[in-house]
Length: 300
Image (tube, rainbow, N blue to C red; front, side, top):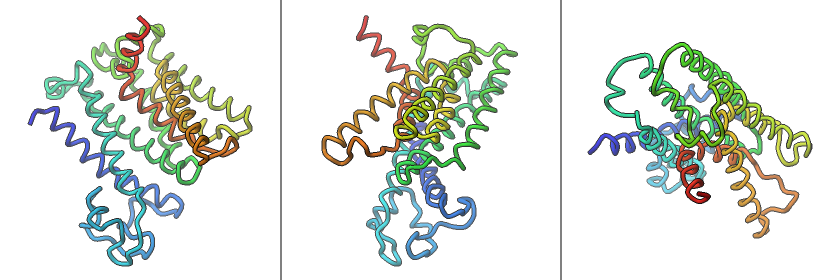
């Protein structure tokens, strides 16, 4: 098996395992229980789960979607979050492989730049995990889980600012490319320094969502969505924030229209928008370079 296929399979399995933990975080958020303390248990009868009941994805189907003790039906949230997180981790691995500099040779040599590249890869996985938690919780509760989001913003800003200073003080060759999610065609939006792109991305993304929350009196967007937009802007920067926002509105508007047509929602119904913002950001992170390439092929 080649290194590429090994990485893709490894990241899917890792994502499924992490997804199992994310389910614990989501379920315990309303119970004031730490996801790091105590074993997993059935949410209905409180029975502690055995190891064979905790195998990501497989256990749910082996148990036929029921608790082995009380036979209460288990939520489809559990396998879906594990599968989605696994797929997102797998797509993240495939995105890394599209970076021309991401090779075994690069990772086999110890240097400050290589350490920072590996650390940034881990941050990608961290951001994916946070967005899964925020999206699923908002989908279920119509609320933004600030207990997860706000610490994530602090950690992300610290990392992004640290990287910015290190890039300015060192002649890194590969690391700056990690923040050009639109690939070498990002020049069509102009050239921006690291901190200008970071600041502009945050102000633009958070500003647009905050404006909508204020103008509509939180009927279209909430202030929780604005905080999420701040987080996404700190991840993406500019112009990636623009692409992510366009994708979020297109997908969100399209799905809302379909729900209205099939009378699942009305014009006055509230639709959780955090999942769409997350989809927009993840699509830009994972496929931003491909999207720009396809767009340029269409207009040129």
